[in-house]
Length: 256
Image (cartoon, rainbow, N blue to C red; front, side, top):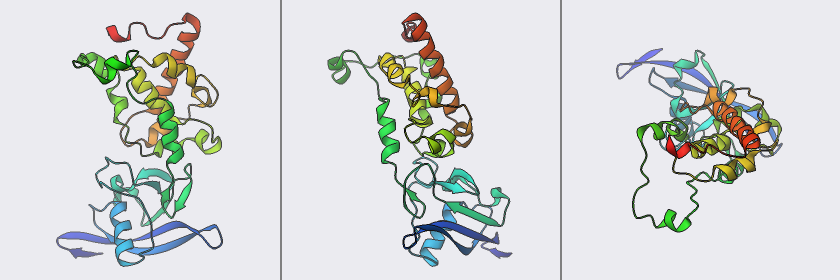
């Protein structure tokens, strides 16, 4: 341990899980890195790429926990590398690897094509019966603070994919739409300006939709923004049962 610019430095062992393209098997490569109390995992990965191994590949952008690009498995848990403080892990050895519920491209970089396809499938935008009014509106859609409160917490999703990676169903059933998409379906269903709730509920009333969820809760545990996908999925189940029994979908939504 030594002092640097007034900051206490400590040496950590970074172990990166990588796919060997020759043998198509995973191997682990270790690096010695130094960090202080302000260092995050993304910082040490960038330092390794710059100074020790230029071939190391990872995805990142904002370094502020906003873009969601740097999702990976850190010490056995899906996390954002930019939001994971090295000292907070409580270990001098830091294991990092790619997320496992997304197809691997290289090293810590995974393919999100299927993830975004599932996201688009729930129509994560405002649906209006009058499309001309929707795209040529002459005034704002007015909402009260109470109406905004119904969906605001679920609008904080940054599409990092951590919830999908933590979900045991997503890891075993490739056809499951996933907690991220389901949470966004509920976000728009809860919006007083939206008129697409009936269509979304019908499309998700299937085993690969809401009924595939086993309520493990892992998705909510790893969400860096507190969106709580597990809660939204159970609410979607309730709304689907209400629709089955009454034939209606939240008739009072826009009157809240």
